Length: 209
Image 1 (cartoon, one colour):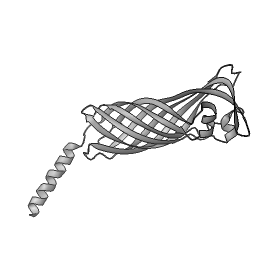
Image 2: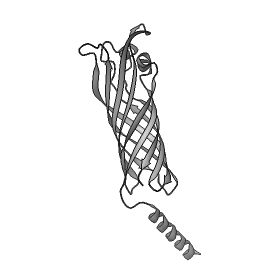
Image 3: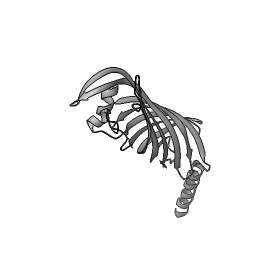
Image 4: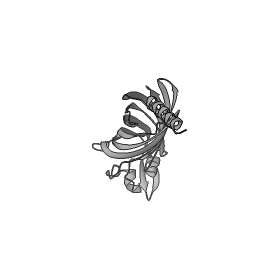
């Protein structure tokens, strides 16, 4: 009986070892999602709402130790109008204003890959969040274009639907402190909101093993 148990454990260990990848896997991905910004009142005042669609893509490297590293670029873009705020009351000025947020993020994490069809994962990292705000008839120095450093945490799960194709769903929380409100005419200054981060949920299409 003892010999049979030892033999079974050896066979199981061999099967697990064979099931695990032995090489670095490099994949590409594209994603679409929605971000709810931390500076909700400021975004709602200028753009009409604090939630917007984000589009992105990038690539990752998965190591045999179940560790992964990914690089992702994305963009949020929406047009609203310049506003005048008095005691938190909004008065639209009818001047179109376009806000664009372009994060470039580096993430490291761990995949709970034990041979299951569904692979959960979690990670965190840093990013450069480029914020631009442009409007018609803007005077000198009124348009904004600045990069800010941010940090993020994320969780998700991946499902293989074919040998070279997978899909994933993710949730990410990001903080980008001291990014908004420096401009005296900024809505963020009126609402005392300075964080450009937010919570993003997205789905991904993955090309690669």
